[in-house]
Each structure stands twice: as C-alpha cells, then as structure tokens.
Length: 198
Figure 1 (cartoon, rainbow, N blue to C red):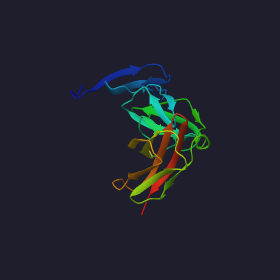
Figure 2 (cartoon, one colour; figure 1 turned 90 degrees about the vertical axis):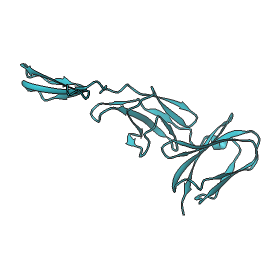
Figure 3 (tube, rainbow, N blue to C red; figure 1 turned 90 degrees about the horizontal axis):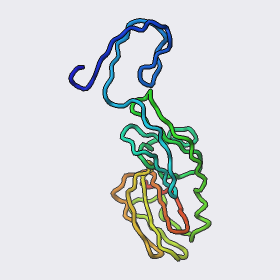
Figure 4 (cartoon, rainbow, N blue to C red; figure 1 turned 45 degrees about the vertical axis):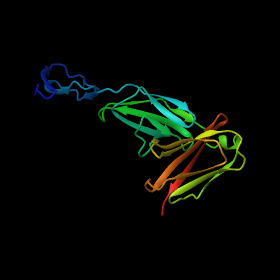
C-alpha cells in the first residue's frame, strides 16, 4: 500500500486464459502481473426506473456517475437521480464508478407527453420565449394544482401550489436556456417547454 488507500498486488499467471481483474477482462497471456486497486467499489449497482407523472427516478440512490438516455442516445446534462420527461420514447439510465464498469437499467417506455392536455383545462403560458416573467393563465379553472419549473436536467427550480386562474412567475434570476414547465393535479400532468432568451 502507499498509505493513501491504494493497494498493489503482484502475481504470475501460468495459464493463457482470459483473466478478469475487476469488471474488465484482460488479454489472454500468461506472465507476471501487477495489480493496483482501492477499497472503492468498481461495479455499480443495477439501476431501475420508477415513474411518477412525468418524473423518472433512478434507484437505488447512487453517489457515482449517473447518465440518462432517450432511445439509446445520451441526454446532455441529464446526470441527476431524477429526470423530467419532455418527449415520448424509451428511457434508460446508467450507473458507473469508472467508465469501463457501467450498469444500465432496462428501458422504460414513456408515452404520456401531450395526453394530459386533452384531459385537463386548457391554459396558456406567455410570453414564450420570455425575458423576465412568465404568466400562466387558465381558460377555465376548476381544480387547484401544483406548478413545477425545472431546468433541462430535471433539477427543480420553482415549485408552487396554485388555486386561481392566473399566476405570474419571476424568472429574472435564471440564465438563458430551456426550462420544463409542469402543471399537475388529480386529473393528470401537463408538461411544456419554455425558453428564456433575449
């Protein structure tokens, strides 16, 4: 050991078979080997996805690297424990401690984006794109609900319960970019994209 948590071990392989040190097989050669390792795990746990409204949650809770995928393609910036869906498709999530040792969940099919619009009272968000404030206005308001505004990686920035037909939000402190607006009540969930720009 180097007294810093790193350990070394040496040995000789007599058989030319594929060897597996950690999660990555090595070349099939006999000879002398020096292994370097730490007490940190290398193989990440197998993740699973649960769905609540339009929010996907990876479990178990993981403190390594997290990455979400849509239809097998990496979602830029989606590296948190949860992800707010903005379009339909097949979602998966990967856990890893080191790049060579990746555990990937099964695919979760999400097909509910846009469905709630036909089940709930119609409303408008304006202006969109916006500069400092956005206003949400319902044509007919019949039931209280909760509004959540998140960044594109799913991190919640604003969350507020509403009980009237119009609500204004101050977004001046947030940087330019795409944000996810979500309204939810007992009828369902509506998810829309809003854009802040000059």
